[in-house]
Length: 129
Image (cartoon, rainbow, N blue to C red):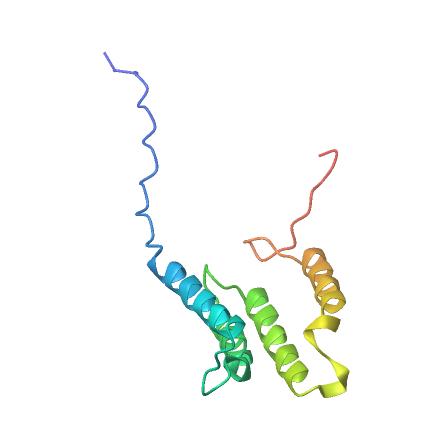
């Protein structure tokens, strides 16, 4: 006779929890920097001068080598933010972060319209099927 008892499904393997050390350290450094500025201390260099570089680097990296952490569209957003920040620093065409928010909302709307699912096709809901 054949045994037909169902085999219970196995739970998915547990992923190890990621360390929160790096985000915590980054927050502490940023807080310390802002506290020093509020107390009137200055550094020999301005971090603001280098602010566009991480955005530009992550943008190029996301466009060149997309992965599960940063897609091509995320890389494009980062690159655009870096270019916009650089333009704001040099006051090119009167652009600054204070005037940026409508442009980013328009870009977010375009991203929602043209978002693609994992299969490479735009996600569509078929009603009545």
